Length: 263
Length: 314
Image (cartoon, rainbow over all chains, first blue to last red):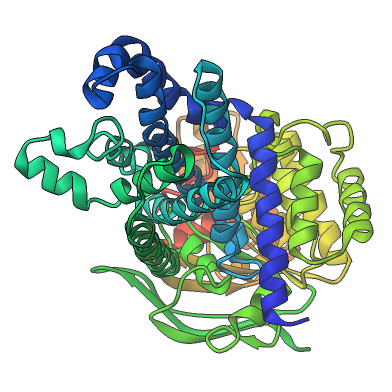
């Protein structure tokens, strides 16, 4: 069999291992959704009335704010999933089992690709939970079937990119503690973008950052697909950001992973 | 006979610290080879190099006929490694761990499961097969670890301190498993800091100290190379001891326990000569012991240090 198909088989084996872990400890997948859900409830019920009036300027209030903030909360879930991935990779790298994998005739990258695919799946499940809760609270997306498919695609794209980055964090980190700290700023990015309030309500410096950081175009694209706001060139910018982040994460993870051979 | 492992001129430094300073190894197929040395001697580094985990700074290595530098994949396909720190997945059951190995060895579903069950039986893990490996005792983890190493039917097996931290019973079980492996034709290279372990298992022993091989040979050969054999005589009273010490002028008397150490290799002839001399004087020892050199003496003689870790770290 060719090298490539062995690589695919080995990656599938590693994926099964990661999914088995996820099934055995479902609390881990659920906890990914935990913090974003708390923010969702907090912002919708505590601040939602005031913020909704500020954004819509009229009728909607809390319901309108729910529909505004949900795409930001979705991105927060993806960032929260990145922390779990980074820790899981770091635990693998520091445990004895990595030594076993490295001395076996298996495709080298399969351990990492297994983590990436597994994390994309579990993060998408966490995201589905978050969207489900938002719908239960009264979130009514007006997306057509095609727009739903596109939204899931955008989500998969950004999750894939952030997962490669968090895999790199996990390979880079010396301890699981630092592996959980490295992706932490990602969770804050939706707040410093258009996730919770429109960027034009921000002071100049912050607004500049908010408009040009990678999460804002992704949030705008999701918001447009789900609630019908204008997307403009956000979709293209998102795709570029995701490709860039995925590439950097992949290259960094791979270099780091192979470098640990000399120690 | 072809070599399972052939290494020449292995060198490795970490920063300014020289860990391996020119190591040559030759391990024939189907034998057990022990790398003996105290902590920090370079045992684990040697294993990590031979198993493709790290690159040597210099030296040539062939494992199972594959060159380490040009064909690491061929080496990996031929070896099995059980490291010092157990390499089992705590979040999978014992059986799932074995099936993971079977899948990574591309055994296929049916064959893989059969192999897993076979190994569970062989290592007495059948009852614990469905429990998470994280709940296993130290001895069970080591057995599972070794079983995982065997899934791919390796020709050469590396065991890095396979019994460190195990209780005496688990140690004996592990020794038995290792001996069974070689009976099946595989080659084993193990590292140990326990002299009795090397003595019991190994066909060949290499003594490693501070990155150098200070001796190599069978346990018997190594023991022969060192002085330290003696005959110990104990007498009933100080007067007799004094007279005996006078007659046997190369002996060392110890007043505390009224004993006399007479140097000798413990051969029958040496013993007979000694008894003849004593008879001629009419002196009668109360007790006689023959002490042949053991690997402790070997270690002391070769490294010039008494700090063999045998007693301290078990």
